[in-house]
Amino acid sequence: MANDASAVSDAISRDLAALADPFTPPADSTLWRKNFLLGAATASYQIEGAVDEDGRLPSIWDTFSATPGKVLAGDTGAVACDHYHRWEADVDMLVSLGLEGYRLSIAWPRVMDAAGVPNRKGLDFYKRLLNRLKEKGITTFVTLYHWDLPQHLEDRGGWLNRDTAYRFADYADLMSRELAGTVDAWATLNEPWCSAYLGYGNGHHAPGLADGRFATQAMHHLLLAHGLAVPVLRANDPASLKGIVANFGRGTANSDSAADQRAAHLFEVQHNAWILDPLLKGAYPQDLFELWPGTEPLVLDGDMQTISAPLDFLGINYYFRTSVASDGAHGIREVPLEGVERTQMGWEVYPDGLRDLLTGFNSTYRNLPPIYITENGMASDDKVIDGHVDDTQRISFLKRHLAAVDQAIKAGVDIRGYFLWSLMDNFEWAFGYERRFGVVHVDYSTQKRTVKRSAELVAKFLKERKAQV
Ligand code: FCB
Image: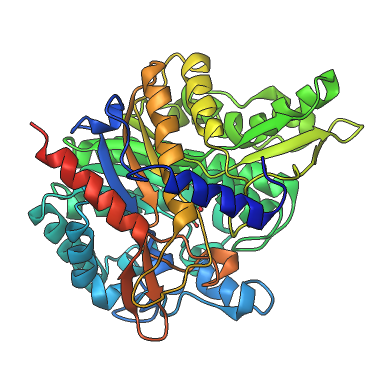
């Protein structure tokens, strides 16, 4: 493995140059199966803009990003990709790339007021969008909560208040009554780990609170919200799939010492079992409270049963691996590896982590539902040169992660699709607009979209796959 960033990119260029087509999977790959869904993902606050139009109320991300020092360069989602006004062209772009699936999210503060009264104009936006996607034959995955909690709910305690879970079920009820028939799969939450831990545990995300006990209580209410919403979605829209999307982390130790191996195990408890055990086993992992003593959430009778309602799918978001060691006491210390390939985020590129998580979950959880990879991708400092964006590292990244998915399928994991994060560059939360995750470049001064080389190659593969007999 090369030792510095430039040597790493030289190695990637050599790798790519050696391949006739740097993206297309080999002939024996399961990705050639036409029923393996390939799509792209976005989220409301990251692309829509129009934050005070047509009756949309403020969300916690409006408040957080307007607070000095919270988001890089003081960026906010006020305009973002202006998708609220440009959605028709954006759908055309998705279709022209041959993408078969689109994962989007709904902005809760756009569709309901504090008294629970529906906002017709906000609802109509999503109806138009979903109807168009249906007309175009795109499979739609709709996330109800991708972090933009209405500020009025945060003012009453947000996810620390049990009542928010019931308000979420009301919101799920409204959306599934209004949108039934246009949604192929509903995801209740996106990445509850980030909402709970980054939002309430360390304050890196909205609403910016930092207390370990808050994180576990917020997680419990988020999972409860999910569990209350699932039967509501089933009743209102029986034909669609119901599931949840979560981010999972691969943690490995660089030594065989029992203490370091234990640290790696605890890292995965904290990132993975904290969410999967309640959903699939109906109980929190006890190791979690060994790591964070005294943080047990308040759980009422029946909650764990509600939370572990059967799922039709599990959405997995995967980005990187973390190398850890014991901190000498009972905790975990991060030990960044030297000389590994990293992205613009500083995240290690580690496709084996995706394969290992998938096969590991498959053996740990007897009742693991069918899986969709609902996010995978990387940020790079992409520039438009002569009308083109050559995102070499992303092409190689996607190819290697798709190969990891293929390996997991061949090892017996039921994986049904993969969504690139993201369709286009967008507001990357605390990192603002600097970090570009799109397969389409966005020039924020003109809102011009430029298809990157990675998207062209994905499109080429999808076209070939479609033409297969
Ligand atoms: C995930 C989020 C998504 C995006 C990617 C890079 O944690 O779900 O919105 O920001 O990371």
